[in-house]
Length: 305
Image (cartoon, rainbow, N blue to C red; front, top):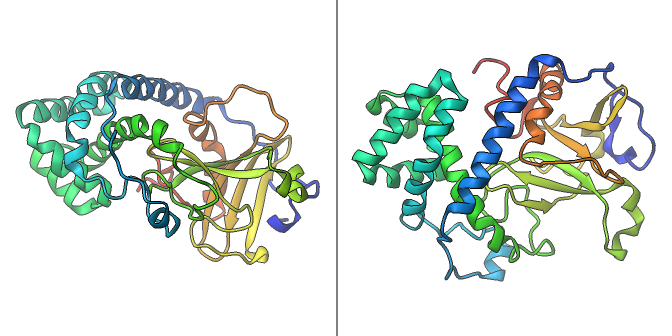
């Protein structure tokens, strides 16, 4: 039985059998938890690259992320610095691609101008161009995309702190990040403090977590973050028995899913940068039902693609 999200204000019944995280995912979680710590440490060591960035509320309200006008040139120096800090440790964390990490590290040292086109390909989502560049360097395309994403993530997380104060939730109505424009890798339900939202306060307010810069922003609970579908009959909720705080929000219109944690009234320790990897068992359950993730991550590519 699927549960329409329009019924979220009621006590939903589990849709999936009891499915605690299998022990096999523990090494995955530990590795990505270490990567999250490394990414934060790197971000904290970087200088702010956009101290004079102009913020236009009118442009922002139309759906233009704050960093939309920032090209590779503004991020290049910080990208190279982040690569120097990240790549040696990432080779240790991911020994299967340690050789690729060493290739990229050496390439950026010997040819610092490489950073500029690499940043451009990452920002533009130019998959083929990224694959071609990887081929020229003798790297696996997936490894270059992974390392490049993590380096850029550290750079943009440095920016997300000060810029996050400019991202007005009252103006931003999009499902992509108001800071960098990336897709969310997870959602969470949290208590709402605004008196104007008392009608749905028990169900919690949905926040989306950016897969690139880590920013959190509010989004309507009853709208698909992928296609914008608002028909409640097409928006479903799946849960496992005994783990009702872990949820899979699905959309029949576009066939995608988003993992959501219910944090209402919860005081448990929580790291939004690590939590998505801890929910890989829900990725498996959603994909077994034919849904695709809104955001592709290194741990949720269970079909081998």
